[in-house]
Image (cartoon, rainbow, N blue to C red):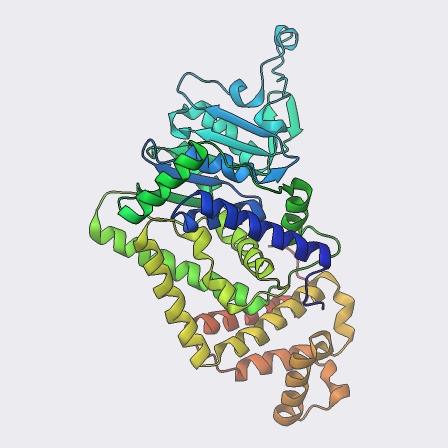
Length: 430
């Protein structure tokens, strides 16, 4: 498995890093926000910027988009009177006469790689609902018209958050969020004044721009859609990341309940949880690696914590540090690796039952294969050729397994159920 980035991908990482540095020089004291925006670009996700008027939300978005060459950009100021055709293009009147809703999408959000929606929560719920599929599935579905959308990343800005069932779904589409407060520290106010005098509040022109095609390539690698380059995520870190997410969710929910009552519970959706994988891969690639490490899990706060909200960052750090220390001290990561590899073997056998004709230990990696083979010989007295008694081997191995944490104990129980179902003789439905 290659560990170093191919030359063209390494060059793309350098271009992204240079673009980040340029925008950070232009957007004073906004490093945390800029990193989130670029992480969204790398993972093909969306960003929500919340701030009061005059803080420079639209300037920041336009400066980011200006770093790329070859991408179409859609801009709109949302309002309550707007209908979906503001975003999808005007209706074809001839088709409308026939009772068909068909949009002329030329120049619309549908045919743009980047989008900026200012004051997004000024839009009515009907329009916001129409945007959901376009933002998440990258597909416009209106009446009989269905077409793929070119959207890569949308940045939305707002002065406030309006909470309804529809806007909650919209918020879940914007995985990366930031609350931007005006700077009142004299040093940063001085630096901002310098930038204003230099650029008069306009977008600064970079010396070089990154081809959008290069951003798309690196994004495909990060999202696991590249046919050549793969970023490896050890299964134990995937499992551990989900533990940290769950712990963070519980801690933050408890903290908010203590402050106020009656508000909606903090909630990490399964969609967000699944996309955490992309964020970890993005961090690894930006550090010029093709393998995710445990430290990359800690950087998930880029996606899960709102920039500018200190409480969320502090609680995330507490959740991650406590679980990492516990698992590292007890050597629980080794147990996770072993059990998750067994789960992978069971999944392979379920898809290809003929594999049961082989000793099941030989379907695992060298490390797990040796563990199972040695254990079978020392504990069960089974030699290599006897290891075809797969059910006996796996059941006895799990029975003797001593979990080091509650989560691993539950994982062991789930695997035991999987083994029972794997070897269960077909029975008629009841």
